[in-house]
Image (cartoon, rainbow, N blue to C red; front, side):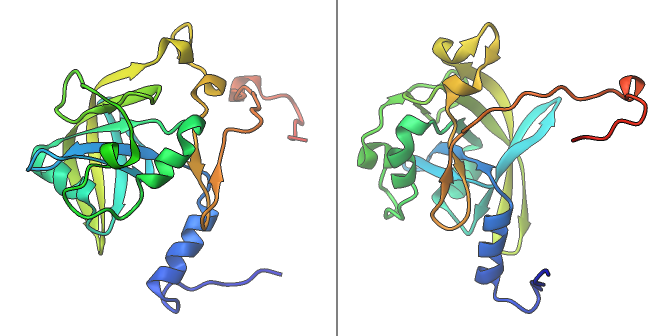
Amino acid sequence: MRRDFDPDQMGTGDFYKLLNSVVVPRPIAWISSVSADGVDNLAPHSFFTVASTSPPIVQFTSVGRKDSLTNIEASGEFVVALTPEPLFEQVNATGTDFPPGTSEFDAVGLEREPSLRVSAPRVAASPVALECVLHSTVSFGSSTVVFGRVVHAVVDEDALDGDHPEITRLLPLSRLGADEWGTAGDIRDISRIRYADWPQGYRPA
């Protein structure tokens, strides 16, 4: 038996919690930006994915009017850092609703490093940074989707296997429902089957 959930019959917050619990796991964009007053901001956003490969564009959603969104609209730039397991508590702490004018880098004790192509700093301890310029935004009610064109990327040498960023070295965190977080856990490797190679009568086990 299944239970039905109608978004038109539920409160916005209740259906938001349901979506958060079933659209899982969600990668986290650790967004750094700079305010018009020159304050560095850092915040995790778990509605995040690749929007385009050519040109390379990533997207994240600001649920509500967050400092990240305000800063990016003003400066046109931001950085996405990967959120690794060793920085679990720091990532969570940067989601605190600090008052405007507070730098999460300083409040949490994270070291900055300069970016190559944009003004926003990178998280020095993160193994990956995607430097982005604002492409466009689209608003849906109280949420705004931010599209950023990736103009530069850096990956720690220790996280690479040749030219391939290796998942057991990146150790990315993800967001689940409620206050739950996920890790990479067990990794399974399977090749996609081309139709030309589809075996006669094959059914996945």
